[in-house]
Amino acid sequence: MAIFNWRPNSTVWTGVAIGVGLLAAPVIIPMVAAAARPVLKAALKSGYLMYERGREMFAEVSEVAEDLLEEVKSEVQAELVETKE
Image 1 (cartoon, rainbow, N blue to C red):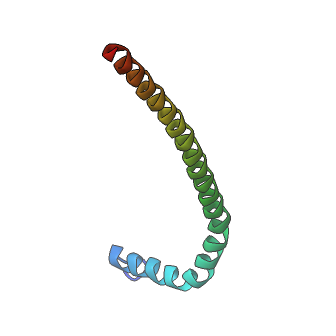
Image 2 (spheres, helix red, strand yellow; image 1 turned 180 degrees about the vertical axis):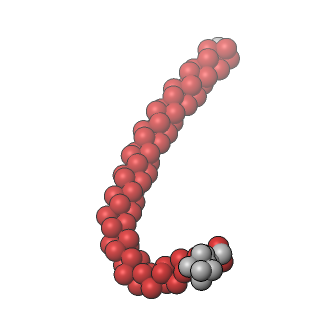
């Protein structure tokens, strides 16, 4: 019998998959959101800690650069005074 050999084409299966997805979405989306929250929180926390550490490192490097610049300025001033005398 030809009726038992009938197979739906791919557009029917696509529609079935979309329908099942729409039925399952209200259950799956909250589960995924609940599972993703700790991961997102950990990623944000580590990013914030890296940002703070970077600020500290930049402040230290800036301080060293300012100290070096002041040393260079004082040496140049001393050399200028020596050359005038």
